[in-house]
Amino acid sequence: DRDDIRRAVWVRDNYRCILYGSRHPRVPVCGGILTVHHLRKASAGGPFTMENLVTCCWDHNRWIEDEPRLATELGLVDRG
View (cartoon, rainbow, N blue to C red):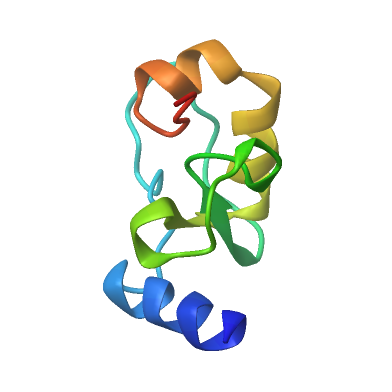
């Protein structure tokens, strides 16, 4: 189920946002509660699977939505 997959993603990613400690000048400091981020959005057919999910804090998850071009360059968005 989704809760099991979410927990497995967090374990795989060591309970750390994938952007934690990023030194990119346009990536904000990590903060907030952990969630999972779809590399390929569910609305675009992206599945809720380990391969399509990464651990991300809420702040960075919002940042990815606000900065799609840079997020794509950093490999955080799969446009398919």
